[in-house]
Length: 620
Image (cartoon, rainbow, N blue to C red; front, side, top):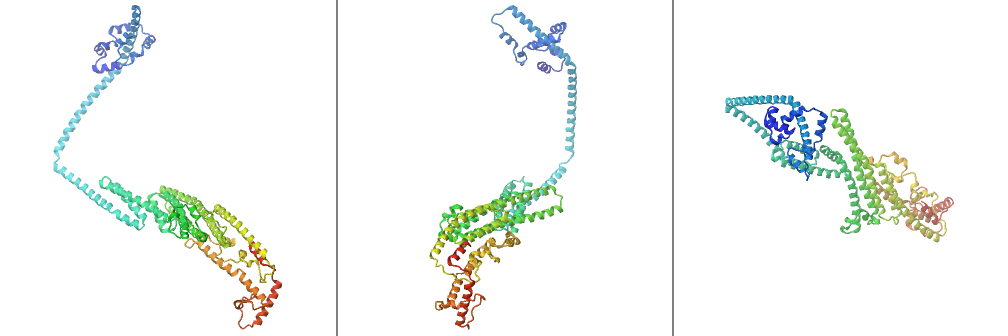
């Protein structure tokens, strides 16, 4: 069929009979002659038999147009030729050719009406193209007439007016570009003033204007410069954000948050803030401990700066341990207070934004986005509480376990316990944590301390027992174990400056939290340090040794008054009234008063020895 179509195309639009007569000798091999057509029509038509003959034709005959049939058949001849076999094979080929010829003839007759119809369509299309050519020719002629009818002056005026408008627009663009070129100076001034929101707003507006004039070659350089400036602003913003961790300032933090909101990086800012808080905790404790280590070392050797924090804590001496611990807690308190005030700022800011949104609900998309950012920030801050406190615990734990406290004085060890107790109270108010890490570390130090303390005191008690004379130890008639320094904690009246571990539970519950109390200034660990000094003074004042010696001298003066120093005679204070003696009282009156007091106290005073007092103190 492809061959027939190609022949029809080459011969032009002619009848099928004419086209058949013009075929080449090779092509006529495939097209049946008139006699063959006649023989085919004369033979009885059996469609099924004809189709079987066509199906028996080998596939190679239908491969392509360049197939050489003669060569193929000659190559297939057997070496020994048989005339009978050749005639049979020739008859078979003739039958196949006749079947194909009849099939082709039938198809030609079947497609004859479609061929005539398509020929008519081609003729109609040719007529339409000729008409279109005439219309185009007339149009071009009319255009030439219109061109000649308009004068060059009129077209020149229109061209000049258009050029004028373009130049006016160009002048405006150049003025804008000039303004953009000068913005870098203003941006630098705003960054020096820490006006980050204004600088970002100006930079974004300049970028928007630069994108409008990006077709100018000078703007491409300006656009890259503005992008570098914006990146520089983000770097300075990150530095400004890190300053919040140690010293929170509301105005400063408000500017930083507004700047990040303009950049659309509120969530990124919160991630960076938590990273800065973690870094601030590490740097703070390292610098505090490093300062004390270098101070105790007494040289400017820089080898300590290369040590790890855990190794650095082992170089703290016993004398600097408590001051360093207090400063360490003060510094960590400042970091946690900054985090607490950051959360307060976001809570207040969210309330203000919620009030604004409730009054204006037009921008639904912006409201949903802001609500998503607020929820993200809130969850991030709440999750960060435990992370910050965990970092604080680990740093303090490393410091606590870095030094052996077993050789500390009793009061110093109690002060360490008070500081850690106050720190655990801070942790509970900070994130509700029970501070298991701190409890475990202070428990280990306490067990180690009291093992050593118990062994030392047993040796001391053994010495007391070996040297005890079992004589009556003169004490006041009103003596009570609560008067001993070791039992001061059992007294009901407490000083306001006493550490929280020594305050009654009702007093603690009725007061405000430490973060509310010291939100605007002060440090709870400064009071802790002051209370240590106060307790030291109370110990010296109420220890009992000096007053006991004076009282013993007073009791024994009825036998021998010559052994009493003049200072004790002058400094004698009445035990019942607490008043100093009147100078006009005679020596005999003083002696008789002492004898009567001694006789009275001898009856009412408890029976004690030095070893007994020592055991009572050890129990305390």
